[in-house]
Image (cartoon, rainbow, N blue to C red; front, side):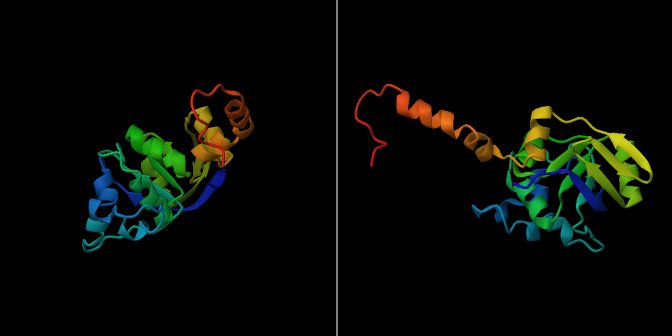
Amino acid sequence: MEPIRTISGKVSDLPRNDVDTDQIIPKQFLKRVERTGFGEFLFFDWAKAPGWSLPANPILVAGRNFGCGSSREHAPWALEDYGFEAVVAPSFADIFYSNCTKIGLLPVVLEEADCRALAEAGEGEVDLPNQEVRFAERSVSFDIDQDIKHRLVNGLDDIAMTLRLAEAIDHFETERERVGPVTTAL
């Protein structure tokens, strides 16, 4: 996972509330085990509608309760694969929010009025270390759990966090008492 510091650029606007994970990436596209290749199916059913346009910009602004529905990790994968680096919304479904942070897609909660202002500005900057979103000569702060922030700023996914303890894990495995045959020796 790449470290996140500042995400700058144009903003895509999806002013819809209660967008669920099946709308983000429909179930018929969940047959892969890789985390790539889902972006082309993002909002698949909506993308067929006349006049649909959602450019692949670094920042997506969405409505409240974004990512509700089933706990589908493919939804953040699809958003990231499409090109989004940050999603800004008034609220997120809890599991969706967590799934985003585990892959390095930055979810940012702002007041609804600030989300609309960012979308209208058309471009902005999300500064994770300073916990600010800057646009149209404004700066709006956002909250984020400090452990999650540490992981994202340092590019640490769950595996990287575990590997930081590799020496302690190896020590434990060599020192622990075993009952029965040893199955780890080759």
